[in-house]
Length: 134
Image 1 (cartoon, rainbow, N blue to C red):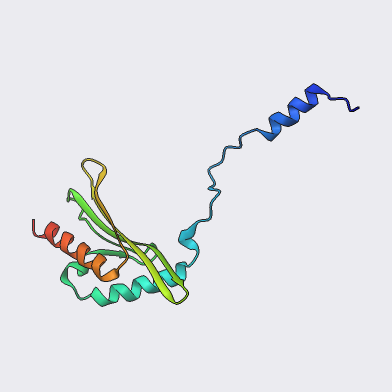
Image 2: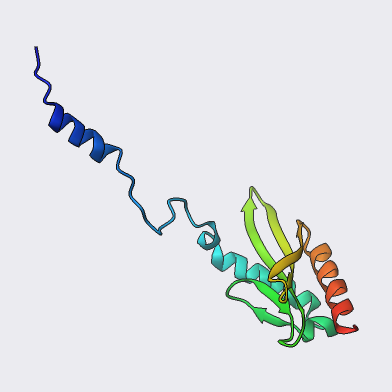
């Protein structure tokens, strides 16, 4: 028969069940998986609409694959972000997210997802055009 030493057993059990607090996420950061391809796709897609008068007034970030319109004195800020880009067996899978941020209330008033670049940019341009002309 084996002897059980309760103090040592309890100590090992406590160490095993101890919660380790950390700021590091345990999941894989998907943003960086195909970042180079994602940036190339964003740049190429943006070039197709770059001559639009609304797009010319927007800020662009090729690093985070986003386009934004929102002057500092404006109540709202429009943002279109390429959230996901991947090539799956030859098919391109994309996800765009449109965000309308209300600076006064510090909240998002609108958020929509698109799987088609043309529809995403059309929606963004339409909403931004309304902001510019108000």
